[in-house]
Image (cartoon, rainbow, N blue to C red; front, top):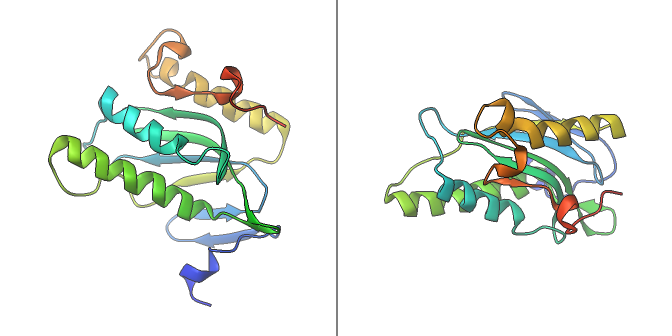
Length: 171
């Protein structure tokens, strides 16, 4: 089985691999994921809205996003890939490739340019405990405040916490 085929079927066993950064995935587990813009690229409010739309596109169909924030130069999501079929989960790499690819195309159309918007890799971390989940959820929520972009997290234009809007309840 080649590497591309390997990531199409994610099961309950820990799957790990390394490119430049280590990556881990287990079916049915939540991950904290960060990806960055290429150096020198800063996202406008309209572009952040495009990225957030792409993050929300397959909510409750392919994944559950518990929290997401689109910052001027990076993105954080707390995400759990869902089962495609019994015992087989969506591959995180495929899900993020869709989010990053579609958002990059739309941003490039808006800017009337071609080329990459995002760095190739991402940082991902398996969430192992409820405490870890809450810590990452709060980190995402407070990121715009910590960066000095707003004084209250809910004033940020590209923060999405579906649990608070009734769109999603954490289990």
